[in-house]
Image (tube, rainbow, N blue to C red; front, side, top):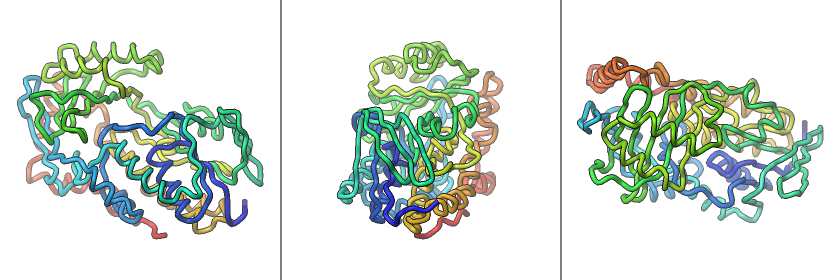
Length: 402
């Protein structure tokens, strides 16, 4: 598969992965179109971190000055009982910035704004369209004919699907989501709420009860915080795309949770950014088929439990953009090198913490108590070498240089 030395590239999805790869391509002089289903950039979102290879990507792409402007001031993570009393604390510096809270934390929306600011500086070759998405794909040896929701039809040399875990691009090019996704035993919900008066500034505070956990985390605005809820449930198709049913299930499972749960539940209905979705892992046999390739959660979601979603998005975007720019006239070779280079990183980044959701959210009171004891042990000095080895799972990955 060869093409001209100045290919036309379409990126589906204006999130971190899509905007990062578009920035790489545009800087290399490659004409790029981005389509984003939302009508405007999505603000806010949960805090994401930069560590190891993803921090190196941010440095190389010149994103760090913007990131520093929006960096959250977080001190660490602590676990509390139903009365709000500490069970254990994990300060950010405890594991050299590699623990639950990293040295560099930023909200997802702010990181995306940093990318959009950089895109604006190379806008001459950028075609950015909000409120549109791909509806049909028809590819052959010379390109991909794309039909958009707006009714327009256009032809591209390459299509990059960066449209999330429920990727429409992946479904059109590879097949139904069910072929590639694995349900991991639960659901997560996030939303913005007023900062509780008794919330400890700078700390991500969590409380675990049988079958569910609830947490409050610092936001960019001190007046607001992010609620974090995890539910351990069998997969329930009735919950998909039904916010009323989702909120009812959350109320049921946190009804007597204690701590700040009543305030979290009270804020849930008025939240304008309520998010609820299955915890699932996406594993693709190949990241590319012909002239369509996948990036970010669309191709390699490990679920929020890994804490590596942003890292995988940035590292994948950096490598994909770099390989395309290296041989724009040989897209087949570029896509093959992209997959070969990124797969060793993904294999480590997608690993779940020991025990997965069963360890994070036990179903019994005994399991909760056992988890607390394990957590206390993890924060002792004697366990630091073991913990550092577990947390360094991607630190030895050698990032390609472009």
